[in-house]
Image 1 (cartoon, rainbow, N blue to C red):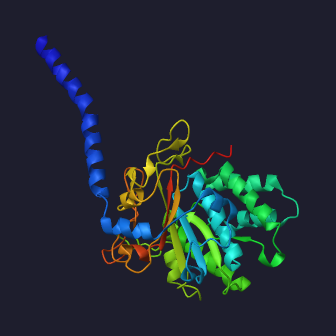
Image 2 (cartoon, one colour):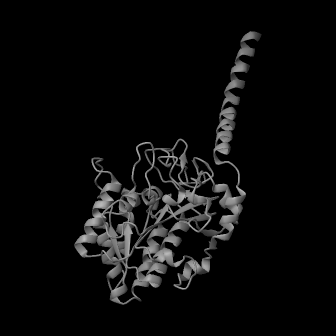
Image 3 (cartoon, one colour):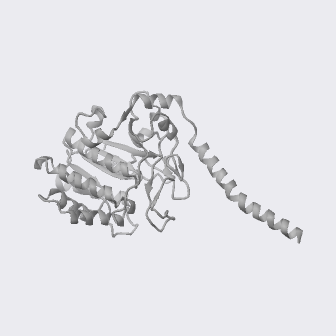
Length: 364
């Protein structure tokens, strides 16, 4: 009997300790992958950063000295995010309005299909706001990007509508939907390939070769170089390799987060918390890891939004892969460079670090 009790006690102890051992192993591996801070990186970042204050974000003035003339000389500006963080919606609105005021940009390239873009344009260009139509558009986004269908997204487009009413017709903002139809679940043609086809067709049919474009997309779509073992080209990389006249005039900005909550509604891929949000998908783990993120933490403060220019002379990001790519634990595939020869600025040229963002609020 005593022998049986000892065996049961040992078994129970193993069962209790095993999760702790696995957790310690997981934490150790994550810590090793992230690495420490680098003095050369933090020095460069300190010299090439801009604080995006709440006052600046709310006014979106054309006079904000955030980017240099080289940046504004481009024609396609793409902001990439991991969907679900509320502050990114504010950044997105700021970028759209700032570029409209600064360089007369009129076209918002959206991660939505053409039918939803048509409805959104009908809302934006009407003399009176059809809020029911806007609500339907935001609701439909749930079909493709569940966490994006939110009250913040609704409010952003309502704000854009109000801004649009102040503009002459020649400067009014218009949406171009480039994604596959939301109801299309086939995989014969990849989404990034379809995005390029739809974007190119719109540019050519409407004669927009000399126009400027801005859009918010999921992080992967804005990368300008091949990723993964198969050297997959995302949307931005496909633009760069296309015969569009502005193929070499693309700027990508990657949004990264720390200490923030992300909306994570119920889905079939992995369990969702009861309140539909999580703080486990930031750039320092535990489920997503970005090498070099600790340098950004070192030079920023909590509750801030900071813009970093990675392409100035002497940039360590022009000869390394720090910040380039995301290692994903348990929740999906890695988003990493295809080869050791690639460098960070070949993927994106700016980073915006968001600290302490709350999660998007579900529309329903």
